[in-house]
Amino acid sequence: MNNKCLSFWLLLILFGSTLHVSAQDAPAREITNITGDLYRVTDNAHRAVFLVTSAGIILVDPISVDFATWLKGELAESYDVPVRYVLYSHHHDDHASGGAVFADTAILVGHENMNPNLALVADDPVFKDVRAPDITFADRFSVTLGGKTVEMIHSPPSHSDDSSIIHFLDERTIFGVDWVNTGRAPFENMRGGPVSLLIAANRHLQSTIDYDIAALGHGPVGNKADVDDSIRYLEVMQAEVMAGIEAGLSLEEMQATILMEEFSHYINIDVWREQNIQGTYQGLMGE
Image 1 (cartoon, rainbow, N blue to C red):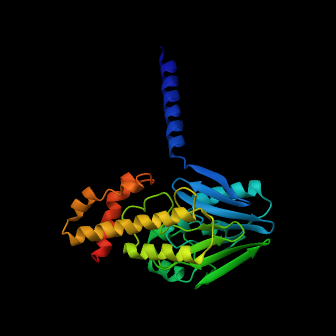
Image 2: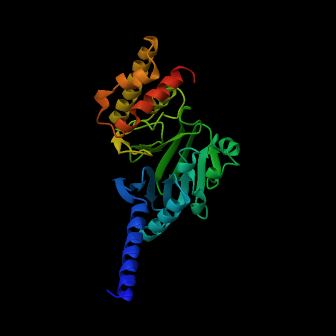
């Protein structure tokens, strides 16, 4: 093989490898129908939802600048109406970044605690793409567009103190992020302070809203019974860890013996069970 041929094949191999790496690095994105004109968008492990009406689109969570830019293009190709509202589930950067992408046509709405929370992290570059809401609310806020109504309800403090439940009335669907789950273990050490706060927030949801579908910020689409089951997971975890503390067990001993076997079908239970126990232990011990 002469040098020119060798160079050609080396370039081809290198180019092919580059294409392979790029394909691996590309985010996994998909738009799927939930019910009626309500859709769910996947961005790797994160989820957003949007409702299409004759007068415009209501979007919940822009997630990131890159995702929001991609989604704006997808929506423009599929629908003749722009995004008119962006509703924030809470202020955390991995869900609330990218709102400015839709600011040319949309009003951004969040809980009143969102602005002071953003002020606290104003110097953190992680939050640089989180645009403050145009409208804030205290307890409840309703958006009616094209004959469709979406309600935002403040959730009791748990994962954050500015979390909202998004309720799509006609679709009998709710959206919440990080403090509520279906068929999935809570993330790592739960990151919500004492597990009792997560239980209280979930119980508030279940007693406040009559719904059928839970299309949440992470994990699979479920229903109200699935949320009940996730509350039971938290309650069992809390009871088991409390019993371990009273028995004088160390955290490591509890992580080795509290197996949560009845929830073995939960997504990420093998990865996050020990961290869930740690978070529960730290909350009960006031750490």
